[in-house]
Length: 237
Image (cartoon, rainbow, N blue to C red):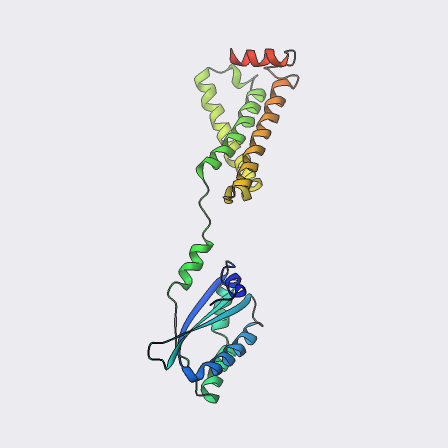
C-alpha cells in the first residue's frame, strides 16, 4: 500500500518514470539497498523529487514484481539521469557484487500520462467571448468619440466598414491580448469561486466604463445634464 508521501509524490504533476522488475524473493533486501543507493545518487541531479517502490508477490511464490517509480520535474531531467554514468556504474556494481541482473520493463504510458498532464486545458469559449465583449465596448466608444468629426461624416455603409476594421485591429492586437494576460488565471481555472470573481470583475469594469462614457463632459452623446432616471428613460427610448 502506498504511503501518503508516495501518493503526494506521484500526484505532484511531475514526470513519473515507472519500471517493473521481477526479482527472486530472497533478493528483496538487496534490491531495496540497491534502490536506496540509486535514490541517493539521483538526489544530486537537477529536478529529482524522489522515488516510490512497491512489491507484489508473483504466482509462483518465488519471485516478486517490484514497481519502481522515479519522479523528476521534467522529462529531459529524467533522461539525463537515466543516461548518466553514475547510474550505469551503480547498475554495473550491483551486477558484480550481489549478482543482480537488472531486468526491467518500462511502463508504456509513463510518457503519455506526462504529455497529457502538460497539455493546457481548453479555455471555455464563453470566457473568451466575455473578454472580447469587455474589449469591444471601450474600443467602439473611443472610436465613436475620436472619429465623430471624420468618420461620422462618411456614408453609413462606408463608415461601418472602416470603423469595424479599426475596431478589430484595436481589440485583436491590443485589448484582447492585454486582457488575456490580465485574466490568465481566470481563463485556465475551473474553480467556481474564481470563475465568479472573474465574472463580477468584468461586469464591474463594464459599469465603470458605462458611467465614464455616459457622464464624462464633452462627449458627443453628453448626457451629464440628465438625472439618472431620465438617462435610463432616454436609453430605453
